[in-house]
Length: 332
Image 1: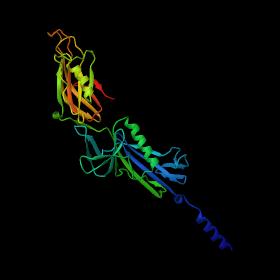
Image 2 (image 1 turned 90 degrees about the horizontal axis):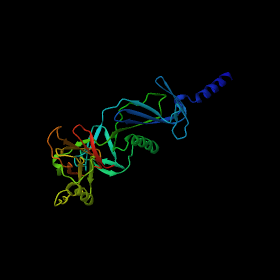
Image 3 (image 1 turned 180 degrees about the vertical axis):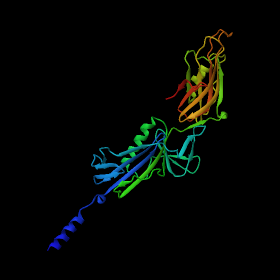
Image 4 (image 1 turned 90 degrees about the vertical axis):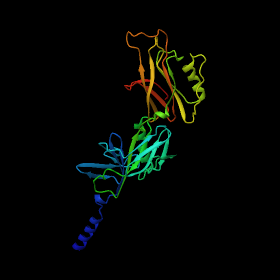
């Protein structure tokens, strides 16, 4: 009788679940930001207590499907930035993308006023197709949370996401989960900077006799014939006869102009030096010259300016001096 009772008790004890038998799962996303590397771990399954080295993780039910981790919606770990896995830029025309991808890059997406998938990662000129990201290993709610955080940090800049092989090993959780999924995303903010080929920029007009009379500097962008006609009245309005506006293919080109402002004498001039495309902003560097103190100058009102024909593919133009100081800008 005692032996039978002992066997029964032993059998009941054997049926009591241990901590290692409580099922739980982990979905992890490793975010490779330009200035940091973050690990976000989402826990699902049975509430319980885990060990991660000397740290205790308490999993408890939350308002969403995922378990709360030490009262937080998920576990977040921040580390040092890792080397970039890939880089995407616009070419000098601003119309095409150029991609340099290292090993382990599986897929890529661009956000520039909307999501596009980048195909042809093995070639330097990927093709874009309107499509939202589809991250392997993340649920729709996890993916939405990740996208929201990435775009919030973008602050309006174009953003490229690369799904890459995970750089960090799994967390050494005790007990181990019955499923551990890792998704790694490298994040690039902005589309780099590409110097424009000088042959792609044409000086249409420059001088010191513009019809612009405001003393403050100003920048203009003409993206169609009507805007160019209005701009050209400022460029050549003081000439007799007034010059006709140049013919421009606005499907591929734009006209930008800088007016330094009306001056009280001669001796002022504006000279084009270079252009650089940074994301959706065209930055034009100018050399400004002014008369030396005490020099003899023409005592007449002058208005220095320069007008350029440049490749399309930008939404904003900034004119800067040789020191990089902003002179004037136009666009959003």
